[in-house]
Structures are given as C-alpha cells and as structure tokens.
Length: 141
Image 1 (tube, rainbow, N blue to C red):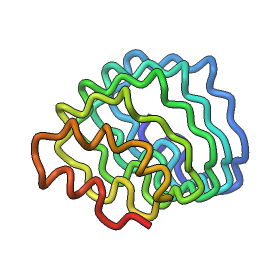
Image 2 (image 1 turned 60 degrees about the vertical axis):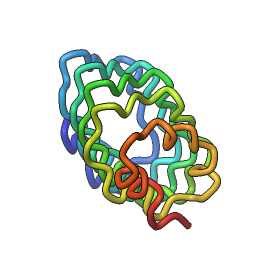
Image 3 (image 1 turned 90 degrees about the horizontal axis):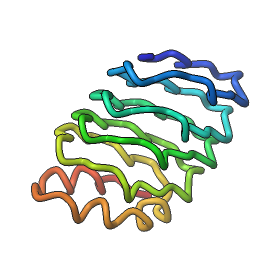
Image 4 (image 1 turned 180 degrees about the vertical axis):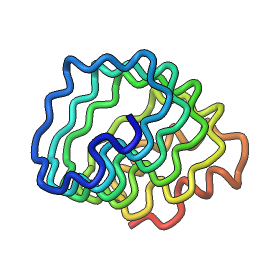
C-alpha cells in the first residue's frame, strides 16, 4: 500500500471501510500529498503488521479529521514525516500509539498545529530516549 494514493491532489473524499489490510507491512506515503482530502476514517484498518508509516499523511494540508483510533503500532519502526505539514489537523488522539519500536521520527510533526501537539503530550512521555523525544517536538508551530 506504499504510496497508494500518493499525490492524488484532486482526491476530496475516500471510502476505505472495506479495505483488508491485515497482511500489509508498508503504508509509507499512502496519502502523501493528498492536499484536498479533508477527512479520513481509517478505523477499520488492521495495522498490526505495519513497520513503515513514514510520510503517510505528508503535506495533507487540508486534512481536518483523521480517525486512527484502531491503529496498532507495536511493530512500527519508522514514523518520520508522518504528519508533516498537516497544519489543519488539530484534534488527533494518538494516546493509544505504542512507540516502543519506533526509531525514526524525523519531522513527524513539522508544520503541525501546536494544539494537536499539546493534546498528545502523553505520547512524548513514553519515550526513554530524550534525543528521540526532541525530534518529535522539533519545529512545532
């Protein structure tokens, strides 16, 4: 599913309720630069085998609603640039994200709204590695 909808600039809505994702390991860049999409409900996604989520929502500038509440992130190692420039995404709950195995987070929240960052402070506290935590909160608006 890597870059599946990448650079679909004219895409405004998408129904993914019937997607079967239980064998997928790579969702990197899946919605990369889908600049006109406003809402994505990924509640039905099975992400237990995913290792790459980098660039997943990169430059989704108009994205306002994103449901990731069912995401299982235990095996994810790369979340770099995942929410890069998602500056209209204010209410996003990442409290259930397990980031134990994540080793790459460069630019994950670069250009994101400060309110979204503030609402996910508990995620940062889960880090034992201070350098990795600094990458998460670097370059916040």
